[in-house]
Image 1 (cartoon, rainbow over the protein chains, first blue to last red):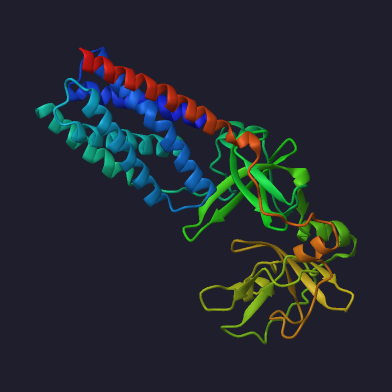
Image 2: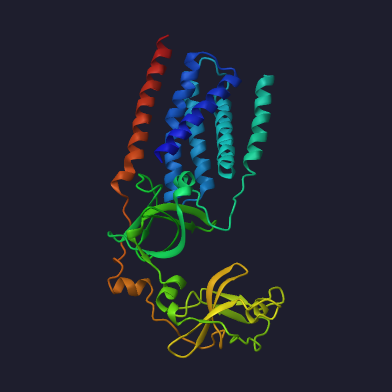
Length: 114
Length: 277
């Protein structure tokens, strides 16, 4: 579990920082903000998802949707409060999470079949 | 602006691709467990079933042998299949819920009680087995009849049935009327004088016994092997209790709480700095 948490956080940090750069964010302030908001949401999301889906056998789809939605909301609030460059913080928070989630699913799939 | 549109398009494609992920299966079950995936060359295939028999009334499946994360917990008496072993740990897989989602985890083998199976039966009665000699007739069977197949002749009940139909030549394979030898290899005569035939493999069905003179088992009763309830009553299995999470499994929660707390403090500091600048 601890390994999963660490891998998930590192991968998300990498993906979301790359996305932020592609989105046009520049400077230490903005990229630190992106890193910190991920440290705030990712470990909690991974832990709660594991607990709810694997241990409590809750259905994966609604749990994933609820947790990702919560992450988007928290990250949106962070972006709105801290960013000096983002003009559409909600759009950024939504898309950056969709991006990292999708890449994560694909990497997971590739890891299993290779 | 164009860069953002390209990014959004790329993401849409990525999302669509991520939905194409499918499950893969193999003849020998291989669990989706990261410890197994990294140590499979040191694991040995077992493929036998056990009753949970933990000292506290339940067993805890861990993410790895000696791991710190709970994969699942089961009350004593629950039948669990151990597919692989690593040292004195067994890797169990259970398919849970209506979507049959896989749950795999590791448990010490000493917390499991072997369910009497065809291997146990052979170990105990193998000396009395005789080569199959064409005792199965089956001429009275017709389409729609079901041949009961048993884990062993002492089972409480059949583990499955083979339905006679034009689509499957079960009957011909058992009779050996297709030009190849009968699927039966050995026989065993039980204390009531009934002759049972053993089949190692038939169209995906592995290691089963058939009552040769009465393959549909009309009105028969068998068994002297107790099931979980009997084993609990007799004290062979520790009585079941509602599982309780072990203390060590809270470690990830404490670590995550620590990371979140430190991050929240840093974010608050950033916010104050932004306001003051």
